[in-house]
Image 1 (cartoon, rainbow, N blue to C red):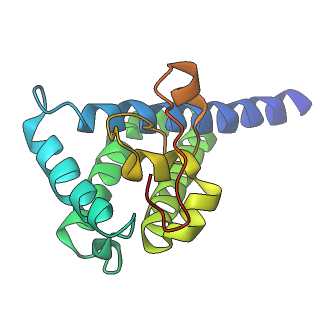
Image 2: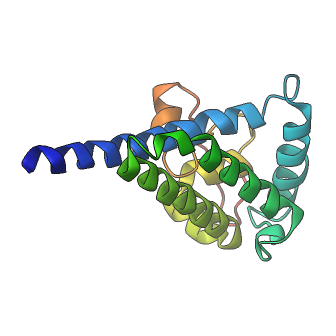
Length: 163
C-alpha cells in the first residue's frame, strides 16, 4: 500500500516538474522568429507588444475569447491531447499535468491582468516583458530553469516601473 502511494507521489512530482520544463522550452521556441515565424509573430508581435506598451498589462486576457487568449488555450489543449497516451499507464501523472496546465494559464493570465502582483510574485516574468532583453527569462511560474540555463537576467526599476 505504501509503495502505491509513493508511486503516485512520484507521478505527481514528475508531471509538475516536467510541465515547468515544458513551459520554459516552449516559451523559448515562441521567441525563435527564424524557425517558427507564425508562433513568433503571434506571441511576440501581439502579446509582447501589448504587455510592453502597457507596463505588463495585456487587455487581451480580460476576455478569454480574445485571439491572444484563445491561441494560448489552444496550445495548452494541444499539449493535453499530445500527452493523452500517458493517461492509461500514468493516470495520476496525467491528471497532475492537466492541473499544471490550468495552473499555468491562471498564473500567466493573472500576471498580465495584475502587473503589480506579477512584479512582486513573478519578478522573472515581469523582467521578461519589461526588461531590455525580452528574449530571456522564459520561465513563467518559476525562474529555476532560467537560472539553470543562464537565461535569467535581473533588472532594477524606478518607482514608475521603468528600467
